[in-house]
Image 1 (tube, rainbow, N blue to C red):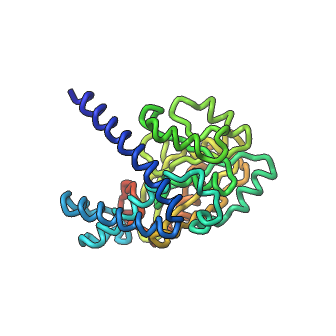
Image 2 (cartoon, rainbow, N blue to C red; image 1 turned 135 degrees about the vertical axis):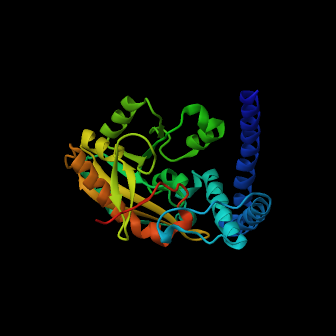
Image 3 (cartoon, rainbow, N blue to C red; image 1 turned 90 degrees about the horizontal axis):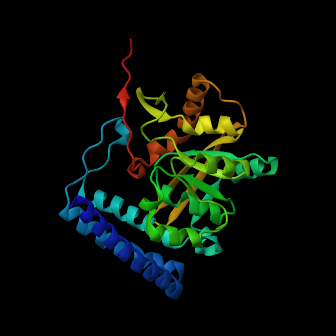
Length: 301
């Protein structure tokens, strides 16, 4: 019975998703990007208001003080509205290459990707679930970098709508998503000199401890460091945030240039440097940290 209900819900979601996909694309074509964003902001605001009024408020977060969020209705609506707007952008993977679309996203650190490409080295890009991460692969491809994503689900979980968006994304001949159990494909992808996005804030697997500058620790996955070591790839970290409701910023920080990371101590150091690069954005945009991880306060001797 539960399986039937899940299948019905998934089918309904796919059907409404396809309708919304073509509706928003047609609206942007008619109105242009400026007026499209105004309409989208109004729609997402109405939807967010209805959901926040009818659903239970978010549970307070545990962890560092800078991670706590304003629990007022107005703040909750603003956060939910922005999440809805970010998901709408997934309908435009082919149009993100246009100047008017690229103007709403600032890419910092592209020179690191260019240097790796000139040297013929692949890149493993570690990331946190901060800001518009669902659009990272799309934006990087729009800026001319054939990035792929290591995904924790499977092909069925993506659905036909996601596969339709894949066909519209720049570099359609270059694989875009890899699932668990597809390491052969991941290796071939990186050997071709491409860029792989990999989350470091997911539970499971081998993890190391990192510490904030105010006495809290969390644990990060070592998969990105291990894969970079295996492939002789450059290890980098990428953060993405929305600086305004229709202005986005992607920042790439370089960590290692094909350096060996063979031991757990070296993986821990790589994760420490990765976390240090991300921490300023975590503190500045805590409301955009959509995948809170476990935190522990350090007990000093």
